[in-house]
Length: 126
Length: 226
View 1 (cartoon, rainbow over the protein chains, first blue to last red):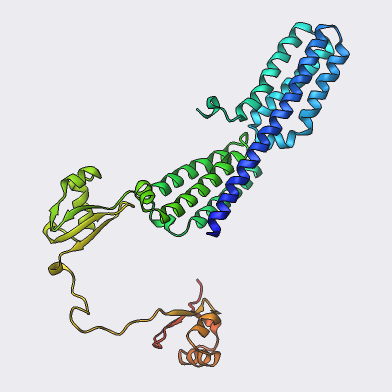
View 2 (view 1 turned 180 degrees about the vertical axis):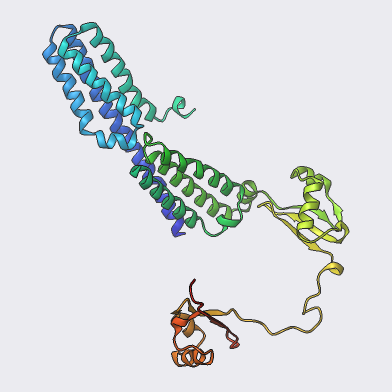
């Protein structure tokens, strides 16, 4: 009977950890997406400094959780986001409006898809 | 390379631990659920071992989940006959009183060649000698011969031999196993005397010494290496 309880406890622990990890990832990507969208709006309004600050904040959030992200995400997906953030930061420095807008849109899709793939939905299950 | 090495060690320990947790049945007799588990685990463990870009958790979590589910399922099947029949199937009698049960053979998709081969493996060449042949849920064929074809036993000859007891190892490669010595009610003094009788002075010179309750000994001295 002890083995049964160990198995039940392990399953519940994994379920809890998966739910917690999903929620954490959703929160992180949500905050980053919001920052990047505001940065986009600021850049369109010519506020390049503010756009840079918002993008740097999103990048900081990502960097701060990098170890956790590499443990729970495919490394290629995490690398894509890191590369995307660097690219967007560089384009902001050079104030390349059109290229920045395209790169930022790509990055937003990447970030949002990270949380999306962890959600328990019929699409993901099937 | 070090990552691959460490991942292999971690996954190996998890799989060994899990299989050990499943119990001894896992090793030799695979029920359908256990067969599925063995196949899936081998594949799941191999991927993160070779692919650094995939987190170790992607291998560990499914493996632990599968092991836990199999354990829960095996406990549930132990308690419920219906669930056991559903998950593991039922034994099928394919030969009854020397006659083939063709419907049953069709149901379990067993050909006559397979049946005859299995019978031959068990030393039976004549179907008419078979009282029952039962295809067990793990795929083994159990054969019960008709009474007149069963081998003669000591009991049948009304001359039962003395019951043998399990011999215990007392010295294993130079090491004295005191627990076994105590279990047989023997003492160090007896051991020293016995060793001298075999012409050795110390347990270090003995490769194997075993004894049973009837006092039957087996002795093998250490041979020189090389």
